[in-house]
Amino acid sequence: MEKYTGKSILKEIAIGKILFYSKDEQVVQRKSITDTAAELARFEKAKEAAVAQLNQLYEKALKEVGEVNAAIFEVHSMMLEDEDFHDSIRNMIEGQKVNAEYAVAVAGDNFSRMFAEMDDEYFRARSADIKDIAERVVSILQGRQGAGELGDEPVILAARDLAPSETVQMDKSKLLGFVTELGSANSHTAILARTMNIPALIGIHTSETMNGKMAVIDGIKGELILDPDEETLFAYQEKKDEQERQKALLQELKGKEDVTRDGKKIRLFANIGSVGDIAKVLANDAGGIGLFRSEFLYLEKQDYPTEEEQFQAYKSALEMMGGRKVIIRTLDIGADKQVEYFGLDKEDNPAMGYRAIRICLDRPEIFQTQLRALLRASAYGNLGIMYPMIISVDEVKRIKDIVKEIKAEFDEKDIPYGNFEQGVMIETPAAVMISGELGKEVDFFSIGTNDLTQYTLAIDRQNAKLDPIYDAHHPAVLKMIQMTIENGHKSGCWVGICGELGADTTLTETFVKMGVDELSVTPASVLPIRKIIRETVADAANVANGDVHF
Amino acid sequence: MKTMTYTIQDELGIHARPAGVLVKEVKKFQSKIMLEGNGKKAEAGKLLAIMGMGIKHGTEVTITAEGPDENEAIAAMEEFFKNNL
View 1 (spheres, chains in turn blue, cyan):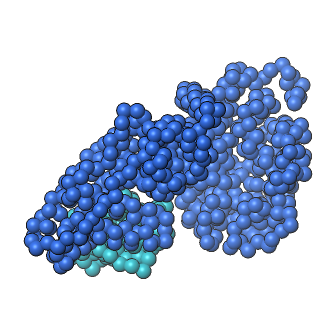
View 2 (view 1 turned 90 degrees about the vertical axis):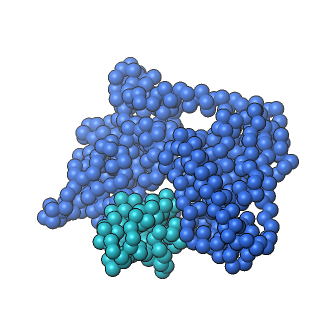
View 3 (view 1 turned 90 degrees about the horizontal axis):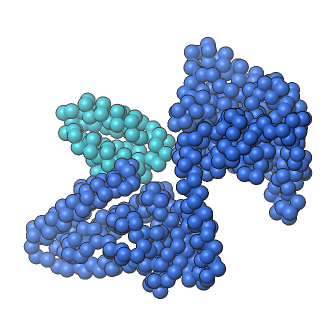
């Protein structure tokens, strides 16, 4: 048994025999020619044939992976028709009197290198596209066939590299997964694999010797296991079956209401970290976004993001969610999430330090920019604004004053904004203890169980030594949650949970019985939690005294 | 000669797909249409050249059109950039 680690493209398991796929290395020889007109005509004819092949591939991809992903083949055929690419080939044939194969290969290398040397990862990955089209034309000139045929038995394909055209050409029903040495997570091949739902690993050294061997792709760990022993193989087979059963079951739950057996509706939302995650939210059928971490806007920049940049991001999130609730949490940096341009001092105890709302209230210019962007975006959907790390009523009052000032300014200048809810994260024991008072100031609570647990138990999450005593189900934490829910309801707030505990399927029933109104979980956890909600009775006799037994 | 400027909103910059559509759009006009940005300049009808400029999100580009149908061309470019990039 051998293990190799690579980068996983799809978090799934594939089990099967390996077929090592080697493209015959294209050997292109430089030959002198005399009839340049005839050579140019040969090139033209091969190019036409290549364009025709690409059009066919486009049609195939259109059916299998959709228009957006198929577009690459249209671009490939346009690359082939590119004037500069042409001129460069014509110049070589006419000027140096070389054969068309050689001219195409050299031009392909040159343009491919131009992209390979660019500093942006996306553009660097395009060098593979140029290589792909040049090789296609050369193959036609040499009278060779393109991608190899797969046999009758489904296989895991191992190759040094796969071009997008090769990936699409393969018969999907015969392809269990693939492993390549080259390629990036951004390459079109990786994108296609993801769209076609084929487990794939990249960055794994492949060789001829793998051919015919039994293998497992563990897309969750990013591992290739070659020649697995019986026990390992059995374990993976179980895991794969379980995954498939779950998938089928969950597919059934899509579109179903999040309602308990006795009719209580729970809002089941998703947590995300960037606009790009919204596709997953929609795919998993979440009812809204319960925690949109706005930090990504700050972490990916070299300087403070402008009001306009933020506005555009929030607006597109709200529009993509089409009227469903989107709760955006204001900036939560400091502690374990550092941004250089903020110029924050190093702290001995960052978890209890200068972070989140503390920075925002201390440096209001940063906070105001974000709030202005959020208010402007509120005109485009169903927005909730959530403030992190609250410990006092005074903080909430100060925040609300800033929001009021912005509203007054917008009213005066006729800048549109919509209705929106305001809420606080309950993640400090202080906030739990004063939740009755906090609730009078806001529309909702969202309990951040990760921080609440570390502050309640006085256990630093970053310290691995403490892991054995870090008990997320500690009765103190559960009592804190129950108290927050009760106080929230008394003061007219709805109460949700957005920390990791929200996705803990062993606690879903407990939370529902405590009266929680919303659970916000990672997109992948939405359907498993829906299943439990639909099997739960919210108002059971054992909660008669408002007390849940832990 | 007509000129317009535009700041790229697309996350990936001028990437393969919109670049391909841009080339098709440019070919509809007789005017010479140039794209400038990131310290580089290229004919907007040349796919590899404009992709090779490596124009990213947030870069301001200048588009010029010169020729008999320059008014229509620049209007079409305005429309194209707003809708695709």
